Length: 260
Image (cartoon, rainbow, N blue to C red; front, side, top):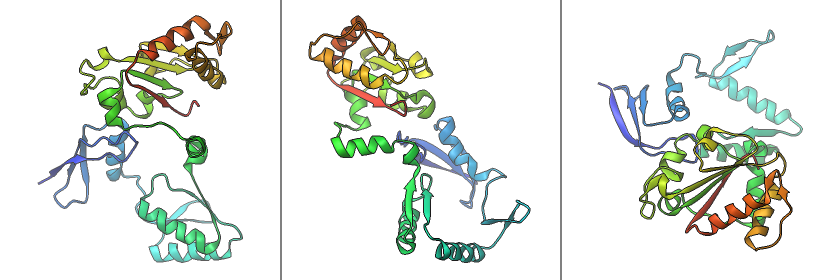
């Protein structure tokens, strides 16, 4: 008989939904279904039983096709390639377990290789800024229970993290946010109107490439200093209005994404 495994944590994104229910076969070898996950998270689990999944090592042939080989063959070929290489780049890791990453780094150290990951074309710059400058942060649980002003800047969680808004940032009721979305003011700053913007109380369309200037304008307005008539395509009066509303908030959170 198939059985259900409850309270499973989704491995896809940082929302870390922990209420998934996974149905597995009686021999524990096949995932049969997934409940409570978003479309992206469900695909992570359901992909396990898709017919096109690669389950064994494959080696490219002379005609460009791939042929299945044994693990011993694959390991032997890879080891020879690493020994012969002048400078090895080991790139990826985003969908790899921590244990595999650790072993990969050990191999890179032995062969004098370079390790890089997907953050290079993703949030690598964000992490460097956080390491250099620092960032005030909190948990998603604190946001759910406390945040009454939520700003989405250069991000679109409606697509990238579909359950983010229902679990943490807009719709859930928390200890100090018992009115759900009615007790929160939601802002979306982006250069285009997104599905996240549709959920916001206020959409601020910034001219592409002027996010830094607009952010500085908000800081300037918060100090009560004079602004030019427009900054990044946003009128001065609108900037002052938004800043005054944000200052009324008890707990303000800014979610920033790849748009920055």
